[in-house]
Structure formats: C-alpha cells, structure tokens
Length: 377
Image 1: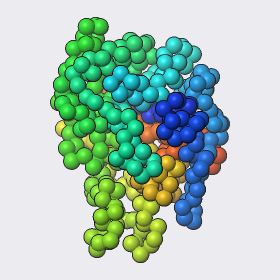
Image 2: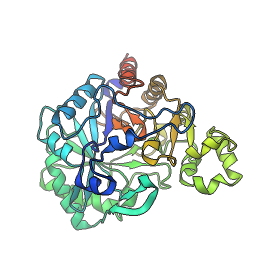
Image 3: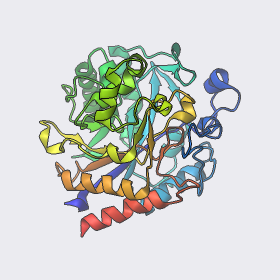
Image 4: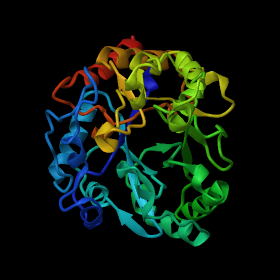
C-alpha cells in the first residue's frame, strides 16, 4: 500500500565553511561557491541553479535546519539521510549533524550514510590528488560505530523493527564489508540493539548484489542498477576512450543521446525522460532493494567543462511521472521497509535538489506531495 511509503531525501551538510575547505579551495569556501559560478555550456542549458525560499543559507545557523525540516515535512518527506564524513576518527562537515542532534526543534526523522570515499581534487579534474584519505581497519570500524552510537540512540533516528538504519555509500571500497558489518553489529549489541545495514549500489559496479552481512540495497540514481542497459554508465566511465572510436556511435544510439557529430556530446547530455524509462522491475531482484529517483542531474557547477552527466529537460511533471512508476512497481517489504530515496534534498552543485530554486519554486516538492496523495487514492 502506498500509505506505507516513506520518502527519504539525501542531505548534503556542505553549506558552511570549515578550515580544511578554506585551505584546499579558498577562504570561505562552501558548496555555494561552486553554485554561483556555474554558467550555461550550451543553448538552453539550465545554469546556474539558484535557491529561492531558503536562500544561500549557512548550516552553522540552527534556524536553517529547522526551516528545512519544516519545509520537507510539509510536502511529504518522511526523513533525511545525512551524509556523514569519517576518516579514521577525523570528522569533516560534522557541525550541522551535531547541532541537529542537540536540537529537538529539528523535528525530522533521520538516518546517516557514511560517504566512505577519499576526498580528492576531482572538481579540478585532479582525481589522483588526495586531500583526505580513507584508511580501513578493524580498530577503525570499532571506533567509528562507537562514535555513531550517540546518533543511533536518538528518538528521531529511523529504524526498521527497532533497528537503526545505517547506510554505507560504497561498500566495494571496503577491504571486507561483511567484517565491518559484523564488528558494527557486535558493538551495537553491547548497547542493546541490532542494526539495519544498507549500502548504495551502482550500475558501474559489476557486482550489483547485496553484500554479506547487510540487509538491503539502495539503488543510487542517477547511476542505479535497474537500468536495462548498463552501457549508459560505461559511456560515463570510458567517455574519453570511446569518444574517438566508431563504437561511440552505437552506444549513443542505444542511449538515445545526441549523435557524435554534435559537439555537445562532450558534455554527456541525456534527456531526462530516458532516466525513468526501461528500468528493470524491483521484483526481479532476489534481495531487498529500495528504489531512488532524482529531480535532475548536472554537476557542471562542480566540474565546469567536464561534467559526469547532464540531464536536460527535467520538469516537475516528469519527476512526478518517475515517482508514479516507482510507486506502481514498489511493494514495501514491511511497514518499516518502505523507503523511496530521493537524490537529493540539497545537492545544488549537482543540479539535483528538492529545495526550491528560482526557476521552479516549490513545484518539485508539490509534484512529490501530489503523487503520493494520488497513489494513496
């Protein structure tokens, strides 16, 4: 029943300056620094994405998180999935999460997702220059979950069968994901509860399976595993290699991208309507998989002339149609296991945000609320 659906919006806590970003990117840097510099790369390209109702907020102000929570709940968002950054005990961008934890006025259910990647100068195209490195190990796993206990015990924390939901972004980067899961569960048990562990899954990861020791997969869009033709992700991963070969023409025809003769193809342009067509049914997987969708995608604000992907012609009506198709296909596994993830609440530099922008206002939020209500009737 669609009455059980719990939309979870992924939340980026980047919008406040920190010493590390000041050093790496310039004094006062936040995500807004990239957003306001974005420029259209071709005719009709929607850039820059500029905020409306909430403005260029600073997450050091607790009033901002209160306003975000109130707005999200007004339009049917059940909870936030906050990205959390842990590097062997070193925390980054943690202040908003700690403020939220200590402020009951941020009255919003939440879960945490460990964004377990190295931080590099990727935005400058220098992926090999590591700014903050992940180092994995048993002792680190123990210290990490011990730190997280304070969040997991919060009454607002989202649970499945009384088990706090914890997400790992990329388990394939871990040396032994099942061992990490086992260590985390053992320490949680000492505090009187078990965990409900999820991991994101991507079409460019050839495994596309549920890791041992985990409970469910989250299909990470716009690079999800449900795409009927994973050549889509291969174009993104091998664009530079394929660009000068005849193979690219075949790939582009399959993906309904612009022809190679169009110079705009260097920007990886894909019409948004193909984002939600031809997706494999959730029922065809032999593990629990929570669906996801994006209101758009365009990370040219971060990567300038070298974006990973640009979805064109995204509209609230098409977003609503994608959500409708998910609600028809998705049968919740239980009352608690009824999550639909939206990427994202506020990824402004990736062009995927539910927060109101100057072009669309609250129309994406309205489309979300309306489709939830229509599917409930």
